[in-house]
Image 1 (cartoon, each protein chain N blue to C red):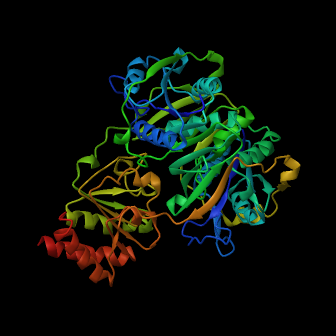
Image 2 (image 1 turned 135 degrees about the vertical axis):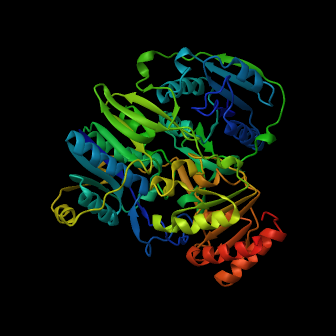
Image 3 (image 1 turned 90 degrees about the horizontal axis):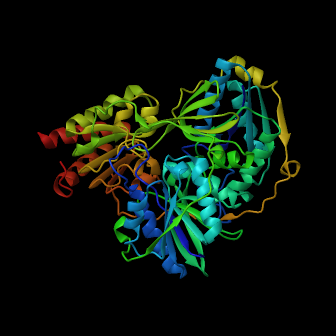
Length: 256
Length: 333
């Protein structure tokens, strides 16, 4: 099975975010970056499927030059090769634009299966995979918790709300968006890291893919959300704060 | 039509109710649609998609709407992305609404991006609000797991598509009225539906019912490792509380899935919800923001959990929680 995994590089989870001078995005120069967490689960699922059924895992990533670090990590974990759509100003593209870039690059590979995380930790639109499927004319499944190969294609376990699930069968090729927690992530081995250096990373540009930046959805402004509730922040040492909190919970909120 | 079309969703996919019912978020989205239409000076319409939706459509006809679209076909009896997308694409092409709103449910996440793509549009997903500027809507949505907000403007002609976050609008604000039901029979053939869905199921009967707990102590990523879980277990015990967790904790197997609070777990509204090391991603907040009193302990003062908390301590949970256990024990004698 030839599996393409679409991964994204995002600011690290613990980042202290500051808004940039344009007021339309965040300051990126002093941040550290990592693989979008749901995409890490998608990569892991691809590696497991390859180990079971054979084939190839190709990592696909659109991002600036710094994304090559995340691509190397994917190769170190076991992806066979990678495609890097290198674009410094990817924020000029909306979700549809990015999905078009990814779909164009994916199309040329003729994969049996395309996996990606269910959403990104930065923009959180949660639709790149579904839009790719539509652009490629493929069936899709979202928020997937298990993937099984069957004669007619695949059977996937789709997560529904409130603890419900549903099995869905579909033919291949198909696109799946993977839910965090579907599997247990592996670490890259020393050997893997060594091997990654020799693996192929194909670079593509936006111009080569022939996709324009014409956006339909534009971010006009980013800002800190307004608090909807007046939170009483309790200060002091851990011991003082704990004592004050218990007092408030007893006599003000009357919950203990 | 040139109005606002609200696509309603039936009962949570999975819950095997006796008769047809609405997904609770449908009403919140209808309220949002009525408000947006009023601000834009547009008419508002609602659509229900499925098979045998007559009673639901009649219920909608008692709301303040211009029309109700009952979109019915045998191939829509069970949800599929292919079927729903094709049916709604035909409805939208026929009536040309300016804006199409959906509740941001798992089902909508499955098909609405596909539908928007058919119109070369981006679905503004998980919007928490909107305002109207020079006759055009600006949608507000969250970035970075709720740490920042963004104003999003849509171009590229109509229709525009947006989905509304759970709890962003109030269902009881839906205005009553009378309207007509119009039937719409899309042209669908079985060969366009590529996925074969099976009956929804639950993994196992839930042994833990968090919904009846008065006090819940809930733990998130801040706990760092499984070996630290006993710290919060002890706090829960001291408070006589049930122990719960955010999704990553259950994903890692540190606590069983049945203790998960959030959109994929249980929705709770206890007297007190004490969140320890939980940043407060929206998927978690929707499961607990109905709690009467919310307490948050987190090292990041900008964590979204503080937006819903009544009381907060910004600090290291490994110092605060042991101190809290001691104080609670003292107080409870």
